[in-house]
Image (cartoon, rainbow, N blue to C red):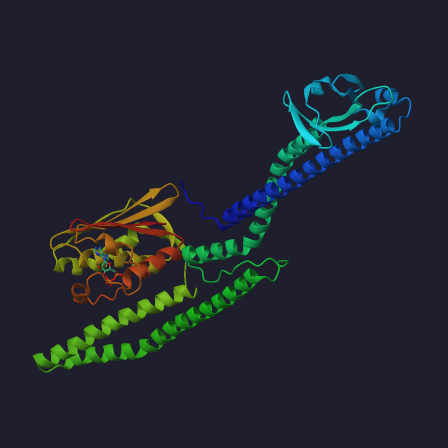
Length: 449
Ligand code: ADP
């Protein structure tokens, strides 16, 4: 059986059970007590009637038999001769055979019915021998009837009270736990939508209890985190911006040194300066682009552009790199495939994917770029038959600075920002990018715009 995990349900079950036990214990105690009290009062009543008749008989009052026979107040009394022969009375004849026992009220059971029986004795009038037995009998069925109706009421009341308790309690705990639902919802929204601007909703009329304080504190913490992230983005953006000019200067001077190099050694040194400054320049521009997209500051000119043209330009720019590994570049875009996009951003995303296909492609392999319309959306697929990405890495390749194989990537001046940038660009367009890969067989990136 599945374990109940909701605290609300567990609390409700706990106090409903407790309530049930409590009601049963209290009602049993009260029921038992009131049953005993009513038996006591029956006993008292029988004794009183018998005593009164006994007194009348002992005082030799005339007309006692008639009184016993007719008066309502003596309806439980009857008179017998000393040998047990019934003389007069209004009671139930079933009890005739119960032996007489003077002065002891007792409970007798006849044919499943309970009676309180009380006997006394008195000397008979002059001229008669032995006197009389005076017997009082009252059925206790009327008392149990009372008990029975109490049981019926209990049977209706207990489920009703329990239902009300459970519903009322569940409603109150649910209300009390609402802030927790809001906290969970906000935490989920933040992690799924990656939007740190979200805050826990606090109802204006909410009570200032512990959960209210928790929500307020968490919101303050989120303010702080948002601020820190903002500062960090600002820092990345400022630092990249500041680095751009000195790097351009180093690159320009490196190129100049390469031009005027007198021998192979100087050429080699100058070439290293040029290569490394190009690498840093690429890193800085990617960082700056990512920071701008993060801060919603990236210029974004969405217009109708011909996808065929963009893919042709991207493929052309990668021909030289592909030739180095004898990789065949293929493209297949139906004529007139128009998309709403920022031309230069989309170009840079597609170029990046082709460049990765070549970098991680097999010698003499191929990289293909194709596009097609699916409904009102456009699909772009960049596929290679290269090394592939293993399952343990595939979810992480979008993370900034994540590289699967540091050593191999270094020969291309990789920095692990390429796919992060591609994803940011595609998401900026409102699109999606997914990847499928198989180790040793190749990788396929699919963009839907
Ligand atoms: P890098 O600049 O290192 O190429 P990326 O963000 O472009 O950074 O890629 C991250 C990692 O994903 C790379 O280190 C590489 O291991 C892996 N990867 C990306 N594209 C491919 C591909 N087409 N085939 C195999 N692995 C790839």
